[in-house]
Image 1: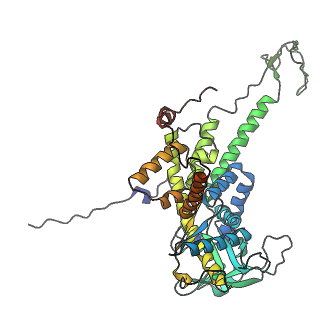
Image 2: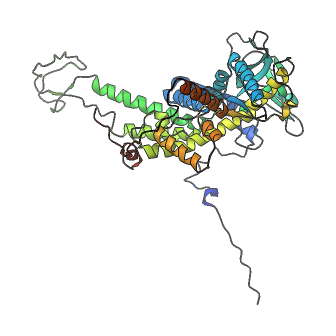
Image 3: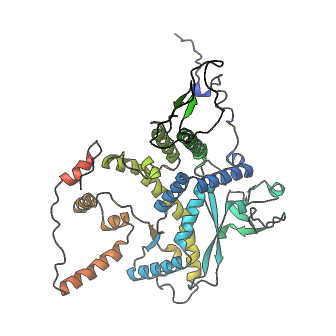
Length: 470
């Protein structure tokens, strides 16, 4: 027997347009990534996010937190060639050059600019005034300055400020010789065509084919405005309720028996004194109704939503962990620290590795600067060490570290890397200290005294730990 085929009609509620959701989805479009991020759209987002970063303390603190946790004091090169001596020599030379060009400071600027501008650029240049054998330097350029005034003349393989080849690889960047926002800027927008090999473009591509970035805090820009408007409204209401000492009012009808009082007249009141009112009039004191009990909770919820744009927990963006216990505080930070590691990996691939290649290109031309006998420098392995994160309870972390090392689930290299340290350097230093301690007749190592668990286990409970009396 043949079973009749049935036509099944299925639908998604989110794909239906109704009178209730019509206005909500009014601005949804089908534009490509580059069309949606047009020069005018990016310009508006930049100026508005910069305005918030300059005038909103929470926005500024968010930028500083993310930048400090991502870049910190800057990455440190760790070479992985077979020669330990050659590794130390290369690492020292690169570290000396990095201090000379203020690399860590420029990386922090790159990260902050991506939060507020969505992208930033660095041009690899030669600076003869550097006090370093390697004259390589970085010149940071704002995203406003990378644009093509005559883009319509060559738009087939180009996005504002960037030209691509047929495979989608950038070939050159157009950099204005002067910032378009300079006060002495003329209408003549001349630009230089800089080869792609000399440009570091740091941005996050959220969609395939996206060539230019938008500010990281773009989804939170309306929330910053709402938070500031609400705070100002609460403050204004509280001021209006607190400034007047009182107000005269009467229960008599409009033509009733009450002594005449001059409208809007001022009466000076003295503290601690009693006074009589005109006949038929009473004195009433204004009661300030703001801030309400929900003000702090509303502000915290808005800040929590703002922090989600960068995966920052609410206790970081507010600088207040009073509502967190030890366990919940660490749990909230896990996603944040993972996002930091992801961003550091992005910086390594887009900025640091290319910068190291450019440094090697120049360093190999300087006699005696780099060790010999290691083969072509393109085959040298390396990694980057970033600042580690401090543990809230160092004793717990030390005990956990000892357990991981004893059961061979970690290595000294991994444990030192958690702290942003080079394991070879630290072990060599520890060996020197051991020799000196033995020479002076001091005990090289001592047993760590047992600490009662009561001091630390209380932090793992589900309830906030009360403060101990002094």
